[in-house]
Length: 428
Image 1 (cartoon, rainbow, N blue to C red):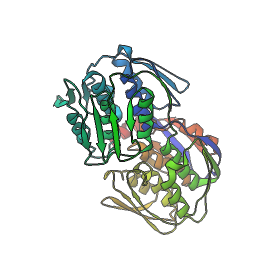
Image 2: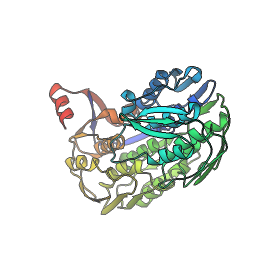
Image 3: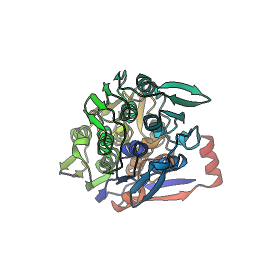
Image 4: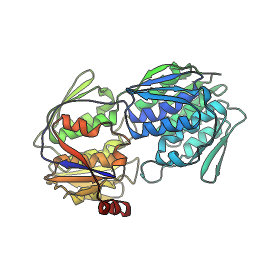
């Protein structure tokens, strides 16, 4: 086990390149098994979630090679064997194997997914969609079993806007008979990315990126090559870090339209942001202003950036209110920020941040992926050294975190945990 050491106070300056989108990658890799020939996915981030999915595909018979950010998947040998637990428990997005295997084989068995503990995140909308397409769904010994004689297109209204359910239903519907219409669909850029891959494979999809998606099923799909879009959440995290400690930081390989809600809020705080075609130039301000933020489904402020921006708001003058309407358990980082001297009070789904506080380095633990990012940003702003454990969460979603921060002038490094520290982490 390791911990990340962050010595605060060093200004950030320079240029970093954003990796491919994690939230696309975890859906695109399962989608590859729907093809009947080889699929190449380019610009994949080197993160643990991608490695876990590659292993899952190999477990069911796919031939997978992964080097230089390119994954090649030959699904010819894939069989619909059950994936009850094991690696599935480490990755919530493993539920995309349900839609992909149901679409291709008309059956699947997947253990209940794991991933970050962000409170109840039911998959009832996924199941509602699968049943509408003709699947029988049962829960047997902690695993979800999907069985269908055939899949038939249907009109499906999602009671809750869900990225996962929208993508999973798309994966199953592309090989169903007839037309499927998904209403109240999520609009995230990652959904468009998945639809683009499927279309390149021969699927017939219209409306991705809107709240109504129409899919005309096809009998077979073929291989293709597909480059993943840049990771808007990774980009947002480094933009916030630059707003916290940057003099001049260039964020390269971004799609600015995907970051509009974050850019608007940071400008409201007083951060100077110059927007190019695929780059952003960030200049921080010594006098940041407080703002109120409410997370919403896309194109609203993303819940995945709520935790990182909470750290930044401790530096702003005045009181900010951050409300998370997506996940009610996404304030676990607040206790850790308090250890560092932050003045934050949580009331229901909102956090009240009294700003202009000076953070102090402390021993803290990342409880989930974006909480880890928030603690790294807090460590960059703090006086002294911050020790962050729970790095397995950070490694799930950020490629080359230390090297990217080091290239900007931050002082960060990893150290092994002592036996006593490891026991403390396990028991906490």
